[in-house]
Length: 260
Image 1 (cartoon, rainbow, N blue to C red):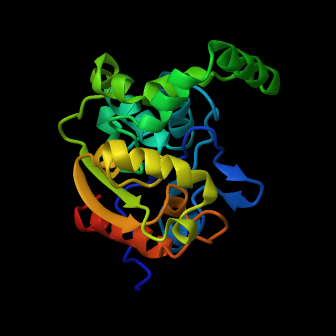
Image 2: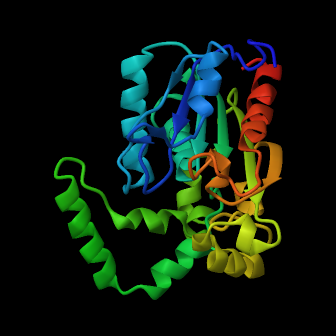
């Protein structure tokens, strides 16, 4: 691969998902991706958003952090999981559309996920209240809310909330995702075994958290075999048979081809 084969026209913003951080010590959320992009001479920024909070709150944090580092000019937004919804809300509702060249989502629940529906419907309200108190204790400044889970239910993403983030003319929208292959026991982390089966019955092929149908948005670049964490090269580059570097490469070659 030539040194500039993945060099894009505009800086790249990598946006992590719900319940996570931009990095865990020396380990980046997007395993190996920042290094690969910087080696190709890209400017890469990796915002750190509150792990558990609403799309609106995280999108506002995202805007502030981008503007601090890159105060003007266009950027390429790349969001994994709920990070893609944060990016969509930022683009459509926070006066940022003219700054966005492209918006690429990876494994994002654009139409929600039945896993979240099941959690919201099954767990008692007291559980969510206890979690909210714990989140507040862990971070007294921005805190957090388990209510973010309600924003990725199937009903919320196909109902009124979905209207909060329409596609904006002039912004290029892309998506990529994965679907767990057989045998499940070796191709997915144990945390996805049960959820994969639940989603398979209700939504079809899925990564253990989001179905392919829900994750498809705009121009769909590719669907690889892998679970939700394999999409970001986790854990520590062990992606259960998925070539995550090839996955990354296909995504960014497409953006480069389209002049992003």
